[in-house]
Image 1 (cartoon, rainbow, N blue to C red):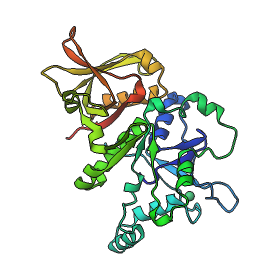
Image 2 (image 1 turned 90 degrees about the vertical axis):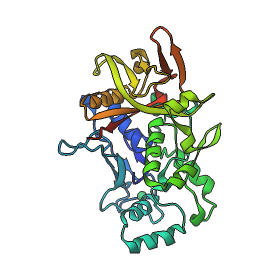
Image 3 (image 1 turned 45 degrees about the vertical axis):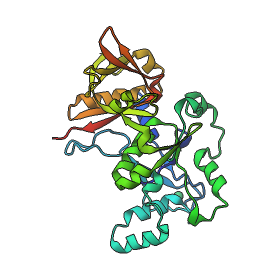
Image 4 (image 1 turned 135 degrees about the vertical axis):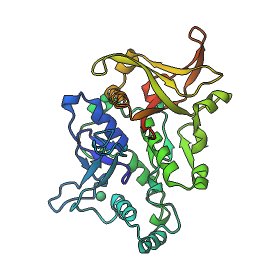
Length: 333
Ligand SMILES: [Zn+2]
């Protein structure tokens, strides 16, 4: 994850890499085309005046080439030989990330003034619950194409922090896409020390600050906690796929863990999927799962848990699919 947000020409807005991935797979298979990305700093220009291009990596597939079955994280990087303005944050981030010898580490420390690492600065700090979000709907996208730079989040944030000296300026990375938050959580776990990870906070719009690690609860902890809220997660297998993944389908997921010696499951029906912008992205993830080297980890945002006495199991309910994120995980061989 090199650069957190870039401008996508086809989508006419800033996107995170997970949004780019979801939008790519949202299209029917025969209509999928790679996007063109621009540095989201509008001052970054080529000598001919055109905007500076960026490259999206690994966002058009869930699994790498056949030689390697590693799950490759998607990310944005600089395009070679493209010029950026002196203040461009994308460049600073990439330079710092690519420096790994001891000299550079010293240099980084100086430049960062003992502050966070560049990768850490890309983690999500601010989450807008999907039902509070009004930007990412097809309608909004279609009606905001009157030209100009539609750089929404970053611009507002820069405006409010521009009077702060650059050495103390803090970038706020916000999202309303659960996939992006989940991806950032996984990244935080990987790159931060245990202590730093446990101390890390997340602000939820209209709800305030929480410890990131408290916001993500294993499903058994979530179920065992009174008035639990946040994201419940756990490893899952697919119980059944109903219908056809290339047209209309539904599916059931079963958690590997049981609660109270009973299964925990969720049923996503086809009508819920039909209403979901990224239905095809989910279909693609389910297809990947079928290739057997993977299992799924499901993340449910603020789910309701009900005991289903007819089936003697616990059902996890969400209001719509913006409240579910499925991540393919490679099985340990
Ligand atoms: Zn730039």
